[in-house]
Length: 162
Image (cartoon, rainbow, N blue to C red; front, top):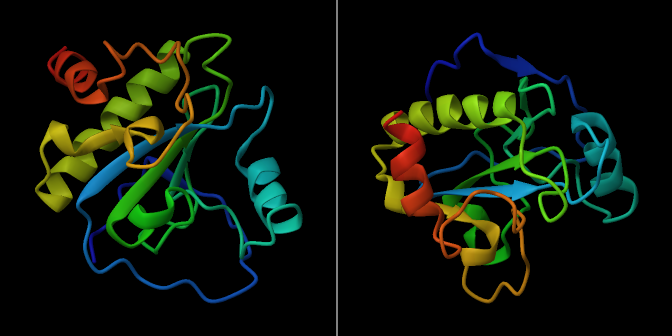
């Protein structure tokens, strides 16, 4: 268990069932809500009410203003089926098929990924867009998410060295 930095805000979400702690983290998987105007609370309610899940499926959520919110935290997610037991899911508010993420979101995503890469001893090659996960036929995290040829790891090499 790692000490959580103060810049990750507790969203105080209530889950329907107890969450299971992550035992191993091999990937960071980046998503977008695909909905404009959704925040961590609306996404949490959607996952509970429409999907029938315990609550928000993502471990962390980045609001449009760049605020980093805790979702499931360091517990098994519900965001990338076969990868849930071995990954951290980060969702950014917005539809990046329509517009790119905000500068604030990109800065926060970079900060959070740097922290997680260090905590779990991962390389940038282990950061994936949801569409890069085997078996996915989605555009997530959106075609305007600044990825070269859908390769988020090359995008991260550029972002993390700024």
